[in-house]
Image 1 (cartoon, rainbow, N blue to C red):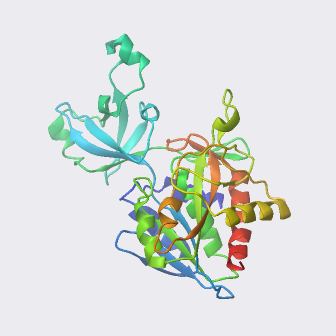
Image 2: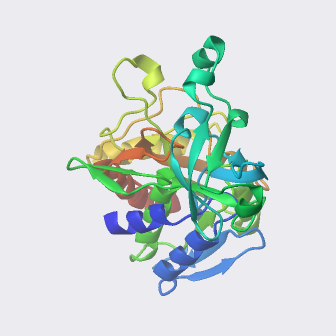
Image 3: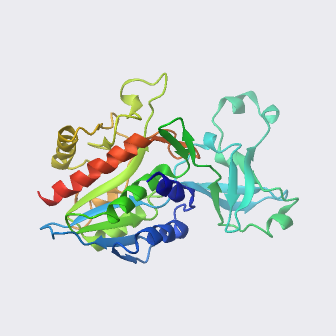
Length: 339
């Protein structure tokens, strides 16, 4: 699964521009299930199992990643931009990026430190004060290569850190996509829908559409979630920790999760000796926020891989957490179908 995750993370697909990721996923699963793409771009798959359950189960993850988008071209040829999804401005400055369909390289810059006032130096940087430098001499030259609305991607290598950790862009949520592909390519006990959603990072838009279409009774959302397990952070603010296994949430800012499914996940983890943790802070949100409110309501649970530096070019996860998340999800989805 490590090579699969690498391919997925290195593919580019910010919200609204997920085509390359979707095509890569289709290439991986086309011989193992039925699939279709809806009008918004969600990839909806159906995998036949050995049995047909009484209730319909949907497993999902989102294909899109956070990124930037060109909003203007200045007279000196530098590019103005906005964010697509929630990005801390401080992770942008100095980063190498790729712009547009032609993947033009550039660098995110801002005013030189010696030109900032004391007050400006003490504040967090603002997006409006940044630009992308693609090496153009002026606006006319830049317009030969870049247009307004072009997507901007972080240029980030997929790197192994030590023996058990991985660093890349887009781990949120290509980790979830990788787990779903692995399950689709295996034998499963019960008929299951698998949905690769679009536009999660800008308001859970794809899942709002796909959940209505599939109309499941149960949903399992696969995600990556913030881990703040670094020196100087203690208590609930650590949220979750690398190495402690998959994260099963009881609540976040968009969902109060099904209590029976929450308890079931921890029961399975205890029975199978799978390390498992919960989020110690009510924060963030994911596609569950839209899914559990669809139609007559959907009983929903989220299983996430703990990830440091989320929504940055350098997300870091522990390989064992991804493996254990997959183990838990396989057992959990079978038990849900037996409820």
